[in-house]
Length: 133
Image (cartoon, rainbow, N blue to C red; front, side, top):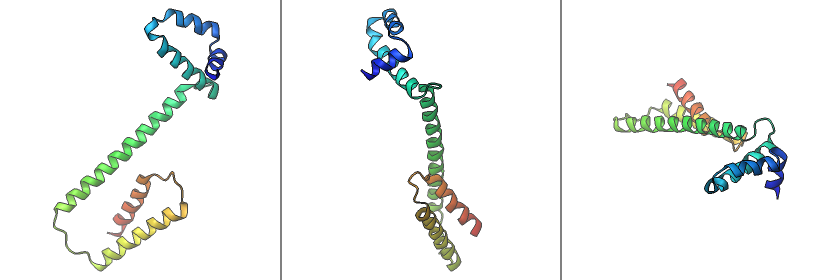
């Protein structure tokens, strides 16, 4: 009932009925689903409708792609370093790494924000490591 009410409110029942008559019978179910989706989206967001949701999903995809590229680059870097013979760490390098991890842990513990982006945390750690070397 909510779907019909939304379609009636946004498009008008008569207009929706006329539109459905112009659609081939094998495509009507998809058309009804699309009309309902758009109508419900327009009820929630009268200005953008489902386009606002599409933009949000596109932004999420861009963010995830950037995060994936970052993680792949870090894995590649770590794999490259793994193949090189590494000298034993000096006491100062060990202290710096421990301090960076401690700072990162305190950052995570103090914010306690579940929406923290892992890339931001990795960037903080990378920056602290780069500054110390």
